[in-house]
Length: 433
Image 1 (cartoon, helix red, strand yellow):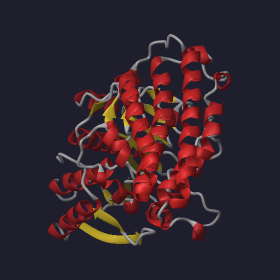
Image 2: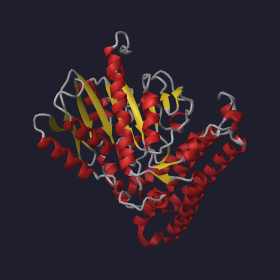
Image 3: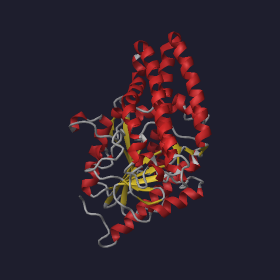
Image 4: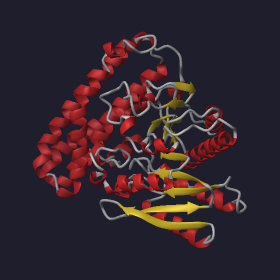
């Protein structure tokens, strides 16, 4: 198991080596190119009547998925020929290689929040290939178009999207219910001392069939957090829904926050939610002011960093409005019904947006050189202080990369087994919508 996250080059080389070593059972092909010219590499293992699609690296700052994809490939190739339950596994080892390469500055550590946020990169929302922003297929990002074309070609019976939440716990989101997955998720998480998220921000209002398992809203209905920049109805998760595909989003945390599994009532949800909104608004104004000071001096090669900063600036008012106490009137139990896990989920969502923005602005300012020393010093103090407060609030503990990978691997395998068994049961398979 890997002691650290592999780089894009290492993922590609390892996938190529596996295909070369098993010419009759594994094949490698390019399914497209990124905006920066990187190949989008698909490793296919096995043959069968059904197809499984695994998408690694959909978010550039979440590198665990590539390692998990290779773990799956190695497992399948180590098994006896024909022992793949009649399925071909198609492993897209990195959907956003351009963004992933920008994150390689922090992969070797030290694994601290301060180092991570000063070196990480997450593209602006409209530059993330998992989302269907464009009005037509021709206008899609090339990475998105490659994934959509692959989904239309394979019509997989299951799609796994592999994610690595920075701080929190593990959870699974599903486009169709999958009875039994909660037990498998809980067992694997317990074996590796990983908490299950009771109410992650990404699934805050979603129905839950058990701890850490959430049913995504169907394409006809938006999430209740309408200001959120990730409505599931505009995602590649739902694109193959028409073929009867079940998509499972499997999250494994980098840093565990044990309070994400705490269902106890929060002592002051109103005060906590109000404080989250006010601090986020204040920090957003501070960062926007610094961004405006350096904007005329930003080199072209770091412009994507500044676009992400501007994304946060535009979305912040809507997010803060949604986090106001009155927005929880329709929540089960109202605002007073929020528990400790839910309050921490909102806290983490707000704080990581601020820290991601500050970190990418810091990298932007570094590229501006000596003329921006004053802004860099202000950001340096801001990042140091905010990371320290975040650590005190969340008490994060690093989850070894090997545990992240093995947990994600075990959940994928369990979900596949459950879906396979369900397909064998008369009337159990979901009909295409």
